[in-house]
Image (cartoon, rainbow, N blue to C red; front, side, top):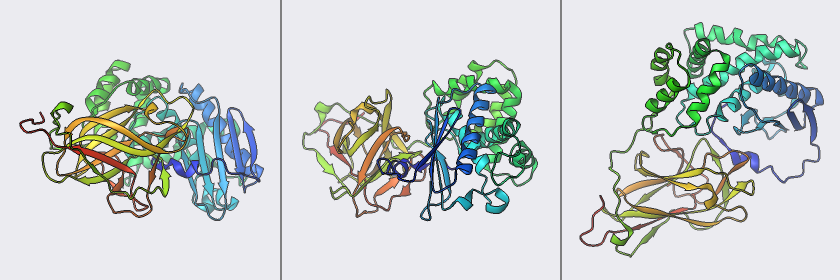
Length: 430
């Protein structure tokens, strides 16, 4: 249940004719499926409906009026389950047999639906959650998912799953054993902390904390102080300070800043003889939207003393006709993918429709001889930007976010180009 996923994998299905697709409806849940029987579709839908109801009633989360669950079954599919963080779950399986109980398949589908509902509950009040470690995100989904499994059993009883089994074993009974065990992973460490927090503030005390975190801007290089202040402001329980001291190192990701100092100068102080740097061949061969990551390209200036003045991206926005009232981000990074400067732009900068080159003017900013430009859209299945790539990669393109170890993108080079210029004689960035 990893956070990062290619949203484009899901969106590539849109517009296709699913001749065999059927629908099952439960309370606030719609399951569309093909290749599996109604019994399993109904079990998935009822699980999601019960989990949603418990998250709303017991914990006070604001969840979408309708959660859409898409199940795609076929021999070319791997078993995967993920959420877009808004209102969509996607489950792919190679066959209906892959949905049988965990003792047969080794896969916890019923728990998985509850786990993804946990992600949904967390991501909606905290839309910018790139400060979370795996322990924070997966640990929360593990904790709440385990709680929801127990609640689903109380509502739906022992006969919910077609391949009947006692799924209570997948809930808090399992998590309690994991927390007490000696071989704990990141998700278990995080779940233990969220369990402790719930014990301090109560089930209904979590949502105000998440909302407070979702309403602040954090310094990506050290988010802890701002998050700690918001935590203290949302709840006055004196035990929270000790909890946060223990939790912050586990839950909060610090993205190390570059040692290259950010320096800028006025556009009038440029030479007026810009150079374009490009790694792509100019021919789009595919496109992707990356959730939990960004599109990055390595560049090399002709030498020292050059300034970044513009970034151009070949792409188009998808989702609602009206652009989200939020920003996407362009980062200037050093060769080690550590952020030097962050440039926000309105989502409306990109239009829907056919892709095209979109120029993004940058306040002239000094670059090292080797640098990386990264673009992050925080997309979901319902909103984002498709960035095009060519078909013959140079090895200069990456996926990831500043402060991480970028992963090579081997399908081509992103159609992301930059413009650089030199200062006029006597002018120097400050």
